[in-house]
Length: 443
Image 1 (spheres, rainbow, N blue to C red):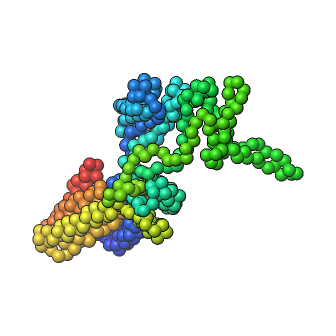
Image 2: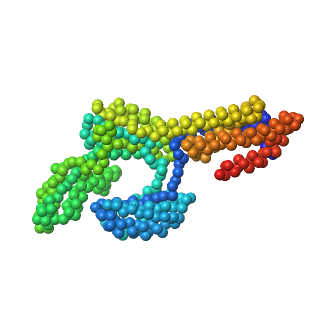
Image 3: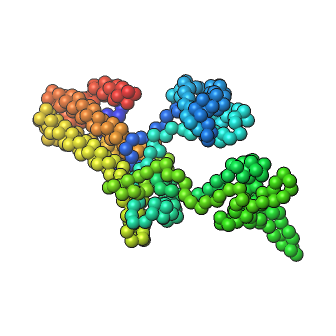
Protein backbone atom coordinates (compact mmCIF):
# COMPACT_ATOMS: atom_id res chain seq x y z
CA UNK A 1 0.00 0.00 0.00
CA UNK A 2 1.35 3.37 -0.99
CA UNK A 3 -0.34 4.92 2.04
CA UNK A 4 1.90 2.89 4.34
CA UNK A 5 5.06 3.92 2.45
CA UNK A 6 4.05 7.57 2.44
CA UNK A 7 3.12 7.54 6.15
CA UNK A 8 6.42 5.98 7.19
CA UNK A 9 8.69 8.07 4.94
CA UNK A 10 6.91 11.43 5.47
CA UNK A 11 6.31 11.59 9.23
CA UNK A 12 6.31 15.40 9.37
CA UNK A 13 3.63 15.62 6.70
CA UNK A 14 1.51 13.05 8.51
CA UNK A 15 1.89 14.94 11.79
CA UNK A 16 0.79 18.19 10.13
CA UNK A 17 -2.23 16.46 8.57
CA UNK A 18 -3.18 15.00 11.94
CA UNK A 19 -2.89 18.42 13.61
CA UNK A 20 -5.03 19.95 10.86
CA UNK A 21 -7.68 17.27 11.34
CA UNK A 22 -7.67 17.87 15.09
CA UNK A 23 -8.07 21.63 14.63
CA UNK A 24 -10.95 21.17 12.19
CA UNK A 25 -12.61 18.74 14.59
CA UNK A 26 -12.19 21.06 17.59
CA UNK A 27 -13.69 23.97 15.63
CA UNK A 28 -16.57 21.84 14.30
CA UNK A 29 -17.55 20.19 17.58
CA UNK A 30 -19.15 23.27 19.29
CA UNK A 31 -21.14 24.00 16.11
CA UNK A 32 -22.81 20.58 16.06
CA UNK A 33 -26.46 20.58 17.07
CA UNK A 34 -27.43 18.34 19.97
CA UNK A 35 -30.66 16.38 19.86
CA UNK A 36 -32.09 13.12 21.15
CA UNK A 37 -32.58 11.55 17.73
CA UNK A 38 -31.49 12.52 14.20
CA UNK A 39 -33.74 14.47 11.87
CA UNK A 40 -36.18 12.01 10.31
CA UNK A 41 -38.60 12.57 7.45
CA UNK A 42 -41.33 9.96 7.45
CA UNK A 43 -43.13 9.47 4.10
CA UNK A 44 -46.52 10.12 5.68
CA UNK A 45 -48.93 13.01 5.09
CA UNK A 46 -52.46 13.74 6.31
CA UNK A 47 -55.33 15.67 4.75
CA UNK A 48 -57.44 17.11 7.59
CA UNK A 49 -60.88 18.60 6.93
CA UNK A 50 -63.20 20.24 9.46
CA UNK A 51 -66.97 19.89 8.92
CA UNK A 52 -68.66 21.42 12.01
CA UNK A 53 -71.89 19.82 13.15
CA UNK A 54 -71.75 16.84 10.78
CA UNK A 55 -72.19 13.24 11.94
CA UNK A 56 -69.48 10.65 11.17
CA UNK A 57 -71.67 9.16 8.43
CA UNK A 58 -72.11 12.55 6.74
CA UNK A 59 -68.41 13.25 7.05
CA UNK A 60 -67.57 9.90 5.44
CA UNK A 61 -70.01 10.23 2.52
CA UNK A 62 -69.62 13.93 1.75
CA UNK A 63 -65.96 14.60 2.62
CA UNK A 64 -63.84 11.51 3.20
CA UNK A 65 -64.85 9.43 0.18
CA UNK A 66 -64.43 12.23 -2.43
CA UNK A 67 -61.01 13.06 -0.96
CA UNK A 68 -59.97 9.39 -0.87
CA UNK A 69 -60.90 8.87 -4.51
CA UNK A 70 -58.93 11.89 -5.67
CA UNK A 71 -55.91 11.47 -3.37
CA UNK A 72 -55.63 7.82 -4.41
CA UNK A 73 -54.27 9.01 -7.77
CA UNK A 74 -51.18 10.68 -6.22
CA UNK A 75 -47.92 9.10 -7.40
CA UNK A 76 -45.63 6.97 -5.18
CA UNK A 77 -48.58 6.16 -2.91
CA UNK A 78 -48.24 2.93 -0.94
CA UNK A 79 -51.30 2.88 1.36
CA UNK A 80 -54.19 5.19 2.17
CA UNK A 81 -56.32 5.18 5.32
CA UNK A 82 -59.13 7.42 6.48
CA UNK A 83 -60.83 8.31 9.76
CA UNK A 84 -64.27 9.96 9.85
CA UNK A 85 -65.19 11.59 13.13
CA UNK A 86 -67.94 13.90 14.25
CA UNK A 87 -67.14 17.17 12.53
CA UNK A 88 -63.76 16.11 11.14
CA UNK A 89 -62.17 13.95 8.45
CA UNK A 90 -58.63 12.60 8.28
CA UNK A 91 -57.15 10.94 5.19
CA UNK A 92 -53.72 9.46 5.90
CA UNK A 93 -51.36 8.71 3.00
CA UNK A 94 -48.30 6.45 3.30
CA UNK A 95 -45.79 6.94 0.49
CA UNK A 96 -42.92 4.74 -0.64
CA UNK A 97 -39.65 5.23 1.22
CA UNK A 98 -37.43 7.69 -0.59
CA UNK A 99 -40.35 9.79 -1.82
CA UNK A 100 -39.82 13.56 -1.64
CA UNK A 101 -42.50 14.34 0.93
CA UNK A 102 -42.58 18.06 0.07
CA UNK A 103 -43.31 17.28 -3.58
CA UNK A 104 -45.85 14.69 -2.48
CA UNK A 105 -47.65 17.34 -0.41
CA UNK A 106 -47.79 19.64 -3.44
CA UNK A 107 -49.32 16.80 -5.45
CA UNK A 108 -51.87 16.27 -2.68
CA UNK A 109 -52.85 19.94 -2.70
CA UNK A 110 -53.28 19.83 -6.48
CA UNK A 111 -55.53 16.78 -6.14
CA UNK A 112 -57.57 18.43 -3.38
CA UNK A 113 -58.06 21.57 -5.49
CA UNK A 114 -59.82 19.42 -8.09
CA UNK A 115 -62.37 18.11 -5.60
CA UNK A 116 -62.76 21.01 -3.14
CA UNK A 117 -65.69 22.39 -5.12
CA UNK A 118 -67.61 19.15 -4.51
CA UNK A 119 -67.36 19.42 -0.72
CA UNK A 120 -70.23 20.83 1.38
CA UNK A 121 -70.38 24.60 1.79
CA UNK A 122 -69.98 24.32 5.57
CA UNK A 123 -66.84 22.19 5.26
CA UNK A 124 -63.52 23.97 5.76
CA UNK A 125 -60.78 23.82 3.16
CA UNK A 126 -58.72 20.63 3.67
CA UNK A 127 -55.30 21.14 5.20
CA UNK A 128 -52.32 19.01 4.20
CA UNK A 129 -49.89 18.21 7.00
CA UNK A 130 -46.84 15.97 7.17
CA UNK A 131 -45.95 13.75 10.10
CA UNK A 132 -42.84 15.19 11.71
CA UNK A 133 -41.50 13.15 14.68
CA UNK A 134 -39.23 16.08 15.59
CA UNK A 135 -42.16 18.48 15.95
CA UNK A 136 -42.93 17.40 19.52
CA UNK A 137 -42.74 20.15 22.18
CA UNK A 138 -39.33 20.50 23.80
CA UNK A 139 -40.67 22.17 26.96
CA UNK A 140 -43.92 21.77 28.89
CA UNK A 141 -44.89 24.64 31.21
CA UNK A 142 -47.82 25.48 33.47
CA UNK A 143 -49.22 28.89 34.38
CA UNK A 144 -51.23 28.98 37.59
CA UNK A 145 -52.02 31.38 40.37
CA UNK A 146 -54.68 33.28 42.28
CA UNK A 147 -56.19 34.88 39.16
CA UNK A 148 -59.09 33.55 37.09
CA UNK A 149 -58.23 31.29 34.17
CA UNK A 150 -59.35 33.89 31.63
CA UNK A 151 -56.96 36.42 33.21
CA UNK A 152 -54.17 33.84 33.15
CA UNK A 153 -54.98 33.17 29.50
CA UNK A 154 -54.64 36.88 28.75
CA UNK A 155 -51.20 36.93 30.41
CA UNK A 156 -50.10 33.86 28.48
CA UNK A 157 -51.39 35.22 25.16
CA UNK A 158 -50.19 38.81 25.47
CA UNK A 159 -47.04 38.55 27.62
CA UNK A 160 -45.47 35.10 27.56
CA UNK A 161 -46.28 33.92 24.02
CA UNK A 162 -44.81 36.93 22.10
CA UNK A 163 -41.59 36.95 24.11
CA UNK A 164 -40.98 33.22 23.78
CA UNK A 165 -41.75 33.11 20.05
CA UNK A 166 -39.22 35.88 19.43
CA UNK A 167 -36.39 33.55 20.49
CA UNK A 168 -34.35 32.29 17.56
CA UNK A 169 -35.05 28.59 16.97
CA UNK A 170 -38.53 28.49 18.53
CA UNK A 171 -41.44 27.87 16.18
CA UNK A 172 -44.44 28.41 18.46
CA UNK A 173 -45.87 28.36 21.96
CA UNK A 174 -49.27 26.70 22.22
CA UNK A 175 -51.71 27.40 25.06
CA UNK A 176 -54.01 24.70 26.41
CA UNK A 177 -56.85 24.97 28.89
CA UNK A 178 -58.68 28.07 30.08
CA UNK A 179 -61.21 30.13 28.18
CA UNK A 180 -61.02 32.83 25.54
CA UNK A 181 -63.37 35.78 25.18
CA UNK A 182 -66.35 35.05 22.95
CA UNK A 183 -69.35 37.13 21.90
CA UNK A 184 -72.40 34.88 21.73
CA UNK A 185 -75.55 35.75 19.77
CA UNK A 186 -78.39 33.56 21.05
CA UNK A 187 -81.36 33.75 18.70
CA UNK A 188 -84.99 33.42 19.82
CA UNK A 189 -86.60 30.92 17.47
CA UNK A 190 -90.15 32.10 18.17
CA UNK A 191 -89.30 35.74 17.42
CA UNK A 192 -87.53 34.71 14.21
CA UNK A 193 -90.66 32.89 13.08
CA UNK A 194 -92.83 35.86 14.04
CA UNK A 195 -90.70 38.26 12.00
CA UNK A 196 -90.22 35.67 9.22
CA UNK A 197 -86.44 35.79 9.51
CA UNK A 198 -83.81 33.08 8.98
CA UNK A 199 -80.46 32.48 10.62
CA UNK A 200 -78.69 33.29 7.35
CA UNK A 201 -80.33 36.73 7.25
CA UNK A 202 -79.12 37.49 10.76
CA UNK A 203 -75.63 36.28 9.86
CA UNK A 204 -75.51 38.40 6.71
CA UNK A 205 -76.69 41.47 8.62
CA UNK A 206 -73.94 41.07 11.21
CA UNK A 207 -71.28 40.52 8.54
CA UNK A 208 -72.43 43.60 6.62
CA UNK A 209 -72.13 45.84 9.68
CA UNK A 210 -68.90 44.32 10.97
CA UNK A 211 -66.60 45.32 8.12
CA UNK A 212 -63.16 46.86 7.88
CA UNK A 213 -61.05 47.28 4.80
CA UNK A 214 -59.81 49.56 2.07
CA UNK A 215 -62.16 52.22 0.75
CA UNK A 216 -60.08 53.27 -2.22
CA UNK A 217 -57.97 56.40 -2.44
CA UNK A 218 -58.30 60.17 -2.99
CA UNK A 219 -55.91 62.80 -4.29
CA UNK A 220 -54.95 65.82 -2.21
CA UNK A 221 -52.74 67.98 -4.36
CA UNK A 222 -49.93 65.76 -5.62
CA UNK A 223 -50.44 63.18 -2.89
CA UNK A 224 -52.55 60.02 -3.12
CA UNK A 225 -54.15 59.16 0.22
CA UNK A 226 -55.60 55.77 1.02
CA UNK A 227 -59.01 55.56 2.64
CA UNK A 228 -59.74 52.87 5.18
CA UNK A 229 -63.24 51.91 6.26
CA UNK A 230 -63.27 51.06 9.96
CA UNK A 231 -66.64 49.47 10.57
CA UNK A 232 -65.64 46.79 13.07
CA UNK A 233 -67.99 46.33 16.00
CA UNK A 234 -66.28 47.49 19.18
CA UNK A 235 -68.73 46.48 21.93
CA UNK A 236 -71.95 44.62 22.69
CA UNK A 237 -74.11 47.76 22.44
CA UNK A 238 -73.13 48.25 18.79
CA UNK A 239 -73.93 44.61 18.13
CA UNK A 240 -77.35 44.98 19.74
CA UNK A 241 -78.13 48.00 17.55
CA UNK A 242 -77.42 46.25 14.23
CA UNK A 243 -80.43 46.85 11.95
CA UNK A 244 -82.29 43.82 10.58
CA UNK A 245 -84.48 44.47 7.54
CA UNK A 246 -87.80 42.62 7.44
CA UNK A 247 -89.71 41.40 4.41
CA UNK A 248 -92.27 44.18 4.99
CA UNK A 249 -89.57 46.81 4.54
CA UNK A 250 -89.43 47.72 8.22
CA UNK A 251 -86.25 47.56 10.28
CA UNK A 252 -85.68 46.15 13.74
CA UNK A 253 -82.65 45.89 15.97
CA UNK A 254 -80.77 42.66 16.62
CA UNK A 255 -81.59 42.80 20.32
CA UNK A 256 -85.27 42.36 19.49
CA UNK A 257 -84.71 38.83 18.17
CA UNK A 258 -81.55 37.76 19.97
CA UNK A 259 -79.64 37.99 23.23
CA UNK A 260 -76.04 39.13 22.91
CA UNK A 261 -73.70 37.89 25.65
CA UNK A 262 -70.13 39.05 26.17
CA UNK A 263 -68.69 35.92 27.72
CA UNK A 264 -66.18 33.17 27.24
CA UNK A 265 -65.96 30.10 25.07
CA UNK A 266 -66.91 26.70 26.44
CA UNK A 267 -64.09 24.98 28.29
CA UNK A 268 -63.13 21.84 26.36
CA UNK A 269 -59.81 21.18 28.08
CA UNK A 270 -58.83 21.38 31.73
CA UNK A 271 -55.29 21.36 33.13
CA UNK A 272 -54.38 20.86 36.77
CA UNK A 273 -50.99 21.18 38.44
CA UNK A 274 -50.75 20.03 42.05
CA UNK A 275 -54.53 20.01 42.18
CA UNK A 276 -54.90 23.64 41.05
CA UNK A 277 -56.48 24.76 37.75
CA UNK A 278 -53.82 26.06 35.38
CA UNK A 279 -52.90 26.62 31.75
CA UNK A 280 -50.53 24.37 29.84
CA UNK A 281 -47.90 26.05 27.67
CA UNK A 282 -45.98 23.91 25.18
CA UNK A 283 -42.88 25.21 23.39
CA UNK A 284 -42.03 23.73 19.98
CA UNK A 285 -38.69 24.34 18.28
CA UNK A 286 -38.25 25.17 14.62
CA UNK A 287 -37.13 22.45 12.22
CA UNK A 288 -33.38 21.92 12.34
CA UNK A 289 -32.93 23.87 15.57
CA UNK A 290 -30.56 22.79 18.31
CA UNK A 291 -32.87 21.46 21.03
CA UNK A 292 -30.41 22.04 23.86
CA UNK A 293 -29.45 25.58 22.87
CA UNK A 294 -33.07 26.54 22.14
CA UNK A 295 -34.20 25.18 25.50
CA UNK A 296 -31.41 27.05 27.30
CA UNK A 297 -32.40 30.30 25.58
CA UNK A 298 -36.05 29.71 26.47
CA UNK A 299 -35.14 29.00 30.11
CA UNK A 300 -33.22 32.27 30.36
CA UNK A 301 -36.17 34.21 28.94
CA UNK A 302 -38.59 32.39 31.24
CA UNK A 303 -36.56 33.53 34.27
CA UNK A 304 -36.93 37.14 33.14
CA UNK A 305 -40.68 36.66 32.55
CA UNK A 306 -41.18 35.17 36.03
CA UNK A 307 -39.74 38.32 37.61
CA UNK A 308 -42.34 40.46 35.80
CA UNK A 309 -45.43 38.35 36.43
CA UNK A 310 -48.12 39.63 38.83
CA UNK A 311 -47.84 38.56 42.46
CA UNK A 312 -49.32 35.14 43.06
CA UNK A 313 -48.85 33.90 39.47
CA UNK A 314 -46.48 30.97 38.99
CA UNK A 315 -44.86 29.90 35.72
CA UNK A 316 -43.51 26.39 36.28
CA UNK A 317 -41.38 24.25 33.98
CA UNK A 318 -42.86 20.75 34.14
CA UNK A 319 -40.79 18.98 31.49
CA UNK A 320 -37.60 20.10 29.79
CA UNK A 321 -36.55 17.52 27.20
CA UNK A 322 -33.10 19.11 26.92
CA UNK A 323 -32.29 17.82 30.42
CA UNK A 324 -33.07 14.27 29.33
CA UNK A 325 -31.06 14.77 26.15
CA UNK A 326 -28.06 16.10 28.08
CA UNK A 327 -28.20 13.19 30.51
CA UNK A 328 -28.57 10.64 27.71
CA UNK A 329 -25.72 12.13 25.70
CA UNK A 330 -23.52 12.38 28.81
CA UNK A 331 -24.21 8.74 29.61
CA UNK A 332 -23.28 7.59 26.11
CA UNK A 333 -20.10 9.72 26.13
CA UNK A 334 -19.19 8.42 29.58
CA UNK A 335 -19.56 4.84 28.39
CA UNK A 336 -17.58 5.62 25.23
CA UNK A 337 -14.68 7.01 27.28
CA UNK A 338 -14.88 4.11 29.70
CA UNK A 339 -14.98 1.57 26.88
CA UNK A 340 -12.06 3.20 25.11
CA UNK A 341 -9.99 3.21 28.32
CA UNK A 342 -10.70 -0.47 28.97
CA UNK A 343 -9.85 -1.27 25.35
CA UNK A 344 -6.45 0.43 25.75
CA UNK A 345 -5.77 -1.56 28.92
CA UNK A 346 -6.72 -4.84 27.25
CA UNK A 347 -4.58 -3.85 24.26
CA UNK A 348 -1.56 -3.38 26.52
CA UNK A 349 -1.97 -6.86 28.04
CA UNK A 350 -2.16 -8.46 24.60
CA UNK A 351 0.64 -6.51 22.94
CA UNK A 352 2.91 -6.24 25.95
CA UNK A 353 4.39 -3.03 24.50
CA UNK A 354 3.91 0.45 25.93
CA UNK A 355 4.88 2.10 22.63
CA UNK A 356 2.34 0.10 20.58
CA UNK A 357 -0.36 0.75 23.17
CA UNK A 358 0.32 4.50 23.05
CA UNK A 359 0.01 4.45 19.25
CA UNK A 360 -3.42 2.80 19.46
CA UNK A 361 -4.52 5.05 22.34
CA UNK A 362 -3.63 8.19 20.38
CA UNK A 363 -5.44 7.00 17.26
CA UNK A 364 -8.78 6.65 19.11
CA UNK A 365 -9.31 10.36 20.05
CA UNK A 366 -7.86 11.52 16.71
CA UNK A 367 -10.39 9.39 14.83
CA UNK A 368 -13.24 10.72 17.01
CA UNK A 369 -12.23 14.37 16.48
CA UNK A 370 -11.96 13.79 12.72
CA UNK A 371 -15.46 12.34 12.75
CA UNK A 372 -16.86 15.53 14.33
CA UNK A 373 -15.52 17.50 11.38
CA UNK A 374 -17.21 15.16 8.89
CA UNK A 375 -20.45 15.26 10.90
CA UNK A 376 -20.51 19.06 10.75
CA UNK A 377 -19.99 19.28 6.99
CA UNK A 378 -22.58 16.55 6.30
CA UNK A 379 -25.24 18.20 8.49
CA UNK A 380 -25.35 15.51 11.20
CA UNK A 381 -26.22 16.15 14.84
CA UNK A 382 -24.89 14.74 18.08
CA UNK A 383 -27.62 12.31 19.12
CA UNK A 384 -28.13 8.83 20.49
CA UNK A 385 -27.70 7.21 17.09
CA UNK A 386 -24.53 9.02 16.00
CA UNK A 387 -22.88 8.64 19.40
CA UNK A 388 -23.82 4.97 19.42
CA UNK A 389 -22.16 4.63 16.02
CA UNK A 390 -19.04 6.37 17.30
CA UNK A 391 -18.92 4.07 20.30
CA UNK A 392 -19.16 1.00 18.08
CA UNK A 393 -16.50 2.51 15.84
CA UNK A 394 -14.11 2.61 18.78
CA UNK A 395 -14.25 -1.17 19.03
CA UNK A 396 -13.57 -1.58 15.32
CA UNK A 397 -10.71 0.90 15.50
CA UNK A 398 -9.08 -1.07 18.29
CA UNK A 399 -9.56 -4.31 16.32
CA UNK A 400 -7.85 -2.87 13.26
CA UNK A 401 -5.05 -1.42 15.38
CA UNK A 402 -4.40 -4.80 17.02
CA UNK A 403 -4.19 -6.57 13.63
CA UNK A 404 -1.75 -4.05 12.16
CA UNK A 405 0.40 -3.65 15.27
CA UNK A 406 0.59 -7.41 15.85
CA UNK A 407 1.76 -7.95 12.27
CA UNK A 408 4.34 -5.18 12.57
CA UNK A 409 5.50 -6.71 15.84
CA UNK A 410 5.93 -10.10 14.10
CA UNK A 411 8.21 -8.56 11.48
CA UNK A 412 10.22 -6.91 14.24
CA UNK A 413 10.65 -10.32 15.90
CA UNK A 414 11.99 -11.64 12.59
CA UNK A 415 14.79 -9.11 12.72
CA UNK A 416 13.54 -6.38 10.36
CA UNK A 417 14.21 -2.75 11.09
CA UNK A 418 11.59 -0.40 12.52
CA UNK A 419 10.71 1.35 9.23
CA UNK A 420 10.86 -1.86 7.22
CA UNK A 421 8.70 -3.75 9.72
CA UNK A 422 6.11 -0.93 9.81
CA UNK A 423 5.96 -0.77 5.99
CA UNK A 424 5.79 -4.51 5.25
CA UNK A 425 3.59 -5.28 8.25
CA UNK A 426 1.01 -2.70 7.21
CA UNK A 427 1.09 -3.72 3.55
CA UNK A 428 0.38 -7.38 4.31
CA UNK A 429 -2.83 -6.74 6.28
CA UNK A 430 -3.76 -3.33 4.85
CA UNK A 431 -6.11 -4.64 2.18
CA UNK A 432 -7.88 -6.97 4.60
CA UNK A 433 -8.30 -4.20 7.19
CA UNK A 434 -9.56 -1.79 4.52
CA UNK A 435 -12.05 -4.37 3.25
CA UNK A 436 -13.35 -4.99 6.77
CA UNK A 437 -13.69 -1.24 7.43
CA UNK A 438 -15.52 -0.60 4.15
CA UNK A 439 -17.86 -3.50 4.90
CA UNK A 440 -18.82 -1.94 8.24
CA UNK A 441 -19.26 1.47 6.61
CA UNK A 442 -21.61 -0.04 4.00
CA UNK A 443 -23.65 -1.78 6.70
